[in-house]
Figure (cartoon, rainbow, N blue to C red):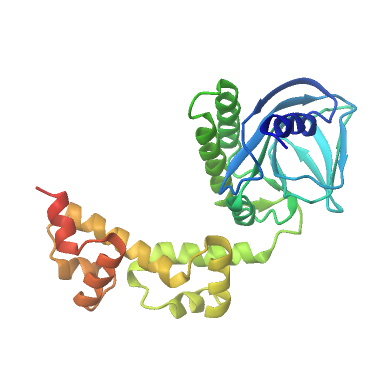
Length: 294
């Protein structure tokens, strides 16, 4: 299949529903190539009262951003309502069915994307194979959705890169305080957020991950699984990154000795601090300070 044929297929997939008004953009992205993160197409639609799409499967990830009206959405046998203040999403190969509320037709932005990071972004937001959630920051979500549409329609040299960055920012921002629109939201994301918040507020004094697990009333093994699932990092690495980033900031904003800086971020052994700092930043603490300060 040629790129032209793929794009024409994308247009058919996008335009299956009945709409009263629409704006679409398409990128020359070959879905057969291995992508880390790529937008295939997207746009804005003002749905007609008879808007109705039912598919057994779909080859991409889809994000729905309603702005007005209401639409019934069944995803893999689960029922939801898309309406202003919610986000809907589903992954490839998941059956779904849209039925617009004829008395209050939906208006929405949608983005269709693919790549190895797409599923990671969905896991970050606990969409799983698909669900509808409440928007964390509706005004910012709308701003980013409009920015994606604007950049997609402009088709400048960097439009695709910009749209991908805007979409990632939208999904990451949404994940910060995600709230489910039904009871299917897993408790694991709440546990992960609890551990993450504890670490961010106490990392300078944390001496081991068992301290975090105890404070959050979970086992270290379960906590490690949560961090692997939602952040692709171990709790120990997360603590170390925060410590060493703060150490770098202290080195460049104070005259404290290397030993004092290490102590301030929780290292009792200056050799251990210097070794970890060099592994993380690529330079010893003193060299790091020397090359950045006159």
